[in-house]
Length: 92
Length: 283
Length: 207
Image (cartoon, rainbow over all chains, first blue to last red; front, side):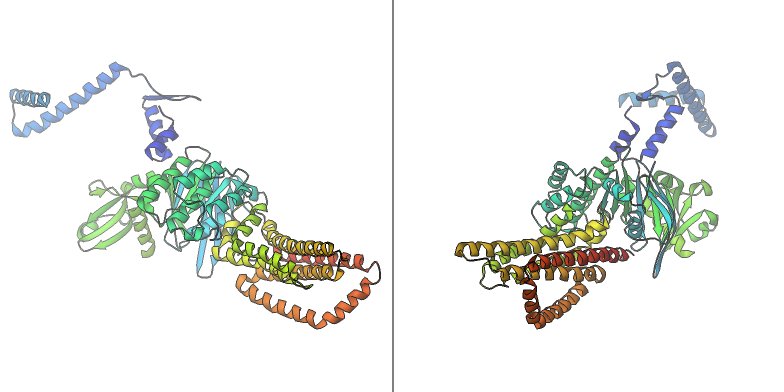
């Protein structure tokens, strides 16, 4: 990673803010610091990331179901809708 | 170490008083001092350099008390750009170069000449033939050419067109790539300070109304625009300045003090300062 | 201090060139006391620089540069000394050269009068500069003119008596040596006092 200061200056952001950003990334396990050498991107536990994404998808599905309920859509109708949108997306 | 530490500074002139100013410029940062003309910015800067006497208070610059004789040597490390004080107007940049060579120990002619070229300043033309913008650029060139650790700039971007201002702000920004370099700049062009400052101080009628991290300020505050009726439901302690318009009220609020139900808009530094100044006037 | 001197020399610019021309012209003109003009002109140079400084508000900028107050004040005196010194020296050289060329004995009158004027100019500077530092260039200049005129009139009035007394001293053999010594001593003491006063006055403007 570029040093906190050089990144800040290159982007014309306050050093305080870039430092906070780096600190938060480090707390979140995405960065780690080697004393005297700098900040590095932490190798990600892919299984963990996958699970995080799956959980996000699940919560989105729940939201869809909540929105669909007042409309009285059946599961089959929802699947159809899903297919239509997925096809649209792949055609773009 | 702090580049500048001001404690309980007071200075009175007939009809004006700078009262109990406390300010810190951490090393490696850029602090912008905002305030209307006559608010006390230039006075503060002059006091920091001990160019005028004070009524009370202490000031440390680069670790040295600025009232002891040893402070004279510290001036080697400070680059200054003043609003209205210059070299005698008949001098040319070339003249100034040889004067400065015998003034500052670390004067570097090569750097100076490169700035002259970069700013397209004519070497042999007397200062009095320079436009306001050229005068400023020249002063900046001089300030940067003796390897300073601290830059003190009084209205260094006023009177310059936007492109030049941006270029100069870049120079100040680059100056602080070195973590040992700090900048104190005063300006009434708040949008300039928003671009590069780490900290913002606001002086109003001789009082320092705020001195905070710029980004924190931008996070903390928001603008609400409401009808007179709706405005009544805003808790008064959350309002930090307001303006009555034809269609209702515009107010500066702290996000933490109002419910998220209100339509909060992002604000910029200039708005924050203007509203806070209004709040002060209303009191 | 070299920086400050350079600044003043650059500021004077054309005036400096004029000064050098005057030194030349007056030194070669016939008559004993012509060089008096160039010597007096020399003493006025620091005043000019003070006026330019004031216009640019240079004092404020200078107070933020690594100059000591003594440097700032003394550089003006030094400018005056150097200018007066140059003018005087040049007039000596010319007079001696002429004498040598004519194979005539060196006329001590010319040398003495140049020396007297030099002392006078330095004294004038010693009186004038503290006023300039306290009152500023404008009012200081007016006061300077008044004092110069007064002193010149005094000297002219008493010049006969003075010259006679001086020659009386001179004719006492060691008189010349003694007088030179006296001149130097007087100048040094008064100038030292003046510089000291000027520094104090300059500092008192710090408000």
